[in-house]
Amino acid sequence: MKKFLFSLFVLEFFVLGGAYAASPGVGSYAELGAAMQTKTSESINNVKKGCYERELSWSDWKNSDEYLYQSKSRYEGKFAFECGNVYCDADQVIFMPNSHYFVGKEVKEQKLYYCAPKGDQMWIEWSISDIADCDIEKCRLTDAASKINGYYIMDTDGGNVGLSTGSGAQLLVANKTKICKCESIGEAKTACENSGGVWVNGKCSCDASKNIKVSANGEVCVCISSDYESKGRNGCQKKQSVIDAENQQRQQEITQQRKKACENSGGSWKNEKCSCDSSQNLKVQNNVCVCTNSNYRRDDNNNCVLTDEATRKQQCETEVSKNSGAYWNAVSKDCLCKDPSFVWSEKDGKCIKDPRITECLKIDGAEWNESLNECKCKDEENMKFNEDHTKCVLNEDAQLRADQNESKTKISSAVAELDKISSGFEKSNWKTEEGKFNTARLISDSVAGVVLGTAGGLITSSVVKKNQVENGFEDIQCTVGGQVVAGWGDQFQVGIH
Image (cartoon, rainbow, N blue to C red; front, side, top):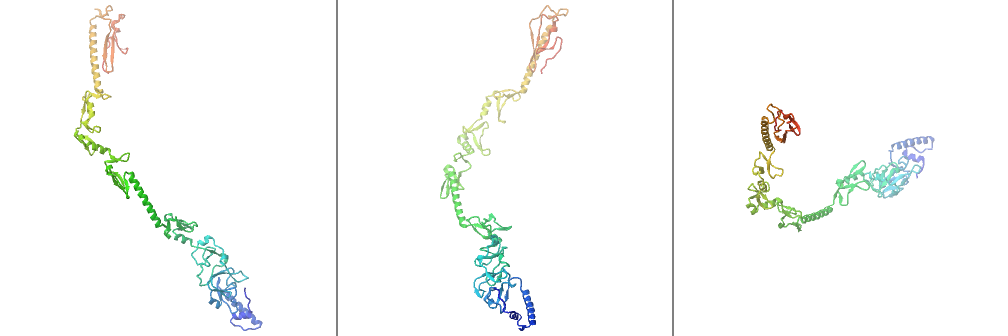
C-alpha cells in the first residue's frame, strides 16, 4: 500500500537537498511549501507518457508492493517502476524478466503485473490463467513472438506485444483489458505463402495445380493427400515411394495389356515377349502378330488369308492361265488376256472367248465391233436392235422411208385404176349418143373399190352405180370415213401425209 511520508520537512529536505534549514517559523514553512510545489511540478512534467522507472528517495520504502525492479542492481540502486503517482497508470500491464525484484524478494521467473486501480496503487501479479484467450483470428494474424509460460501475449487488435527475451522490463499496453493470450500463433499471410498458397482478400488461396488445398482451419495450404509431401512455397510433390509403386503398377498393367494383345493377335506370350507362327502367315511387330505382308489380310476368324487381289494374281499366274494367254496387269491389278476377243474367267481360271461376242454372232444381221468392243447391226444406217436385243430391225428413219415408198406404190396403182375406169366412162356405156345418161343400161351392179394409199393409212373410195339414180354420174362421190370429200366432176389429189 502507499506509505505515508515521515514528515513534510524531512521529505522536502531530502528532495531539495538540504537547501533550507529546519525552522519552525511560519515564513520558513511557506517558503518550503512553495519550493516543494515547484520541484514537484518539474518532476511531473519531466515524466514521459507511459510507465517508466524512477529513482526513489532515501525515505521511500523500496520493498512496497507499489514498486517493481527489473534486476538486482536496479533494486539496490532503488530504480523502480512505480504503480500510480502519475508514473504507471491503473490497469497498465508490465512484463518483468527473470530475476526481477518485487516486495523485497528476487523472482526468478518471468512475470506479468498490472497496476491496480487508483486508490490501491500496487502491482498485482497477473497469472496466465487469468488472461482471456484471444479469438482465433487474433492469433493467426500476428508475427512470431516469444512466449511466457507457454503462451503468446497479444493485444485484442491481433498484434503481438513483442515480449523481450528476458533482459529488461517492458510495458505492454495501456490497459489490461486489451490483453489476451494465444497458445499458438502464426502470421497468416506468411504461413499461407510458405505453404505454397496465395494470400488474397484476407484469405489463403491454394492452387490445385501445385497439389495443395486449403487446410481445415483455412489458415494454410496442405497436400491434397497423404501420397504427397510438402515442398514449402512450391506446393506439394508426390512422394518418391508412391511414384515407384505407381510405376511398378503401371508396368504390370502394360505387361498384361501387351500379353493380351499378343494372344488376341494369334501369338503366344513367353519371357515377356510375343511369339508368332510364320506357318500361319504371321510375324511379330510391336509386340503383336501381324500378317506377313500386304498380300494377306485378317478374315472373320482373325486368320491371315490372301487378299482378293493376291488371290486373283496367284490364280492368273498359274500354268493353265498363262497357256490360255493370261497375264497380270500390275497397274489395273487385274488379270487380262492377250487376245482382245478373250476375257479372264475366274471360274475357269483361264482366258475364254468373250461370251458377249458369242452371243452377238447368234443375232441375225449383227456383228462384233472390235474397235468399240460391242455388238452392232451390220447395216447401222438403216438397222437397229430391238428392245430385247435379239435381232436387228429397221430404225425410225428407215421405217419411215419404207412406209413412204409403200404408200407411193399404192397411190400409183390406184391412180392407174382410176384412169382405167375413167377411160371406160368415155365409151358411153353410161351415156347415150346424145350425151345423156343411159339409165337403161348398167355396166355393172358391182362395187369398184379404189384404194388410195397415205402415210397414215388407206382411203377407200367406192364408186357405186345405183339403178334408182336418175341423174347418172352425179351420185358418184369420193368419201373418207363416210364423209364426202369430192363429187362428180371435182378434181382432187391424193398424196402422202
